[in-house]
Image 1 (tube, helix red, strand yellow):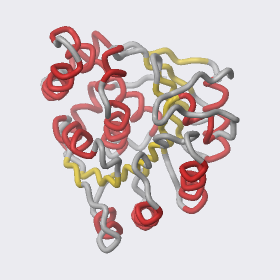
Image 2: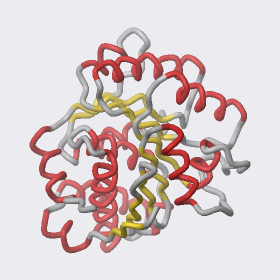
Image 3: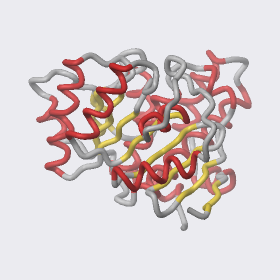
Image 4: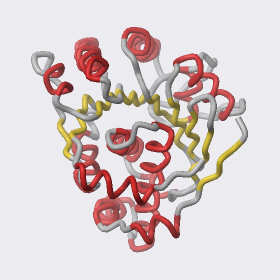
Length: 267
């Protein structure tokens, strides 16, 4: 398959889609910022009284269970049902799935009650959502002793969605196609929120492209190339985070086309 990441980046900047979030309270500011510097319009509305209306005017919805409560999950379901009626993509970041029984139960509750179009998580989060007996270290990935492409592909087929596994090499699959994204930098693992921001970026690109595998791959390529560029000039996690936003804002088609590293794999 062919993914024109630079073209999708330009479409995001031209269309400026509204991306509605019910997201992790720890990283909500960062998620809003990364969407904004990509050229889209973030909104972070959590109140039960308005989430359905806000989803109704958005082009994508991003849910993140990183700081979940029962009431928060109820609001997520209201927003997602509104998004489903409008037929806009819904991204679920399964942040911390596999860490606690409550978190697992709420994740499955969301997946069973609304249509999720993209499930995103690290290796152990996705493995847990796929039914594997694994534990997540808080919100950090633990080792999964299975073929992650097969685990993700099986989950994608069962849930009829696109699955994104983030890590040193990202996996994007809809159960039929599978792509590895090999961009990124180790410094990303030293900053809280880079995973949450990845979900927001995926939602932003999905707002501009109906092929959700292509959208997810393109979003990750652009985000992670920006991370590579930021890492060249940063002295540590603090300056890296600042420079990441600048690198995204200044990202151009030439850099994207020259630096992107993907591999389409047999599935």
